[in-house]
Image 1 (cartoon, helix red, strand yellow):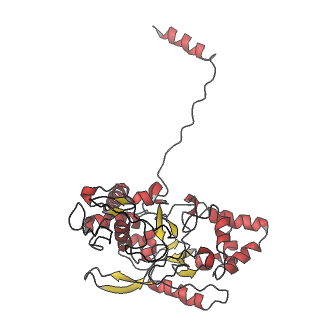
Image 2 (cartoon, helix red, strand yellow):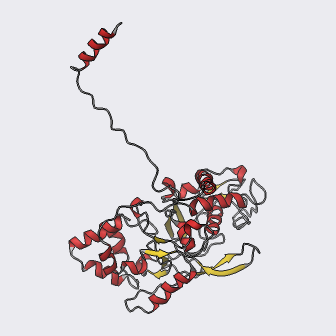
Image 3 (cartoon, one colour):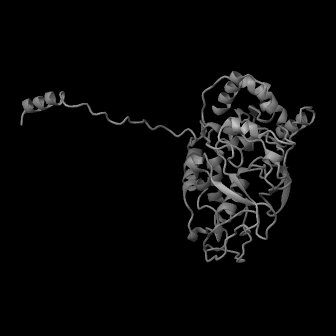
Length: 377
């Protein structure tokens, strides 16, 4: 067959029916799973190594259990750390804590399940990007937010959550610090928060949390004797979260309305970080949209599950970064839209009642502009 045959075939194809091929989508970097710009090669390698461990399911031979909720960090913070996973909390005291742990390993025979009469509350695993900046915000900055809000006359008066931190040099010694991680700001550092999540969600012990959680079978260990996750692996997972960048976003109008409705009092748009071991987190202006304080959100958002000194109706101001990736809003996912979330801020005793009233007083077009601004964060 020569070139003439090929030419005849090509001409014949011109008369054939047009077939539409599917559009190909160019895949680029995932904006919610990107490292902070400017990292050294060493830190980029730690980010990649921590990313792999964040996604990796743990096995019984690695110390999973004896009771657990999920097998990997990504199970709770799905879609490259965007979340949400679901954790069920039991309202009221139980012999083995207030978290439902339905899965078993390492010979366990009895899961932690709620009594029939128990009230259950849901918590969603939040996105974790940008959290390295949270760690770099100084206690002095948070305490200044607390001081300024104490002088307000509109009902907004958040407070810092003073928590205990395990000493890095003298476990189990403790020293008071300000919490900033978790729905109720119960932990002060990402290393502690990661260690708590490994133990609470997967039953994986670490040098920071070396003892298995109480369980109905009284098991004090699992298929891997002693500590399950060493300091190096714990550090890699924590560094992955620590080095996650805040997803880039397009600027949209609405910041003026965000301020006039007093949303910005708690969801502070810009903060300057303080000192940190990592230069990329040190002394930088960054948009976090939180004041790190606990606020009384009233009867409507009360869940009856206290943490430390935080009551069941107190919540740390949720950071709004990456909100555009979330399909459900608020701590339990009850809000499907930003408007729903705003409305849920209103209830008896809520510090946000004045802000909700200010939002309601806006014209319809102003409300739409403000909602669009928040949706784009």
